[in-house]
Length: 378
Ligand SMILES: *Cc1c(COP(=O)(O)O)cnc(C)c1O
Image (tube, rainbow, N blue to C red):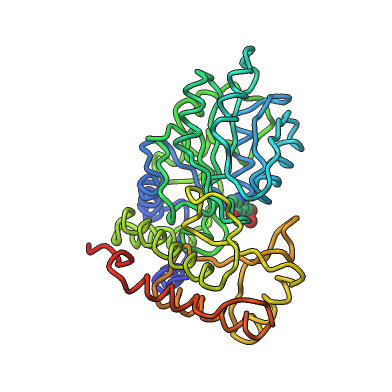
């Protein structure tokens, strides 16, 4: 977490019913609109991302509604489980955890649904468990091609603020996100960006909701307030995070993460290891998942790197446990942080006896220093 953000969070906690708070409230709500690239409502919960998932479902859907979801990885499975527990009928398209959402299947499923029973298509934009980014504009196009009225719900928890994302332009109905990944904040804030269609759906949606209800949020937010106690100090941090993103410019932020991802992939190729994501057009700019050679335990490798170099690599989640490790390059990250990260991986590979080739770090540094890998001048 950037020091700028930590210092902002250290402000005294003010009365959340007072006028000074209203200024902060409007500032963060307006700022988030810019980050989601929307002119519609954005609501902020004192919650984790899981809470924001639930809010997206309970505000738009009714018991027994059909929802189309895709098994892109661990987080997609968890969101499906939640939808099922809430009483929704989920058509869960199986996946191999190496691919994103297939727009052709979206189109086919919706075209087959002549009775228009599918009420929502819910997809994870960046699967944090696999390093695979689904192509949301293509999913949108598939829904349009099928001329289907289903709502489009998108989880941008690990993409917002690191990967290009456009709520309005891509006509997403509910975008779900939270504070602790690309937005560089501690955990504790959950977000929904809401389209006009989603708002209309919420007036007749019948899943029970109270804490997550958009209506009292939107009503009080108009003047910069919240219907219940907000996470005041995290909002100071959020204001600072938005300023940092806007100072750099979203276009430059996205390009920076593309560079880091490309440099990381060159390192992985240099080591002779395999990237989990199977399709280059779905490579994640936010993180890279690396397949551990057979007969080697990725978690033992991660433990060694943590103990030797005080560096925490991402674990394989769910069915990938022990089989992969994940290199994060999202959020507050620069060339030298990436160079250090990749050096830690290369030294860890050598120390752990995993078969690999030297030279991955060198390949990454060459790219970062080259003209093609150069950051855009701003
Ligand atoms: C982290 C994550 C979640 C869960 O968020 P929590 O804040 O842990 O509830 C959901 N989806 C994706 C894609 C994530 O990366």
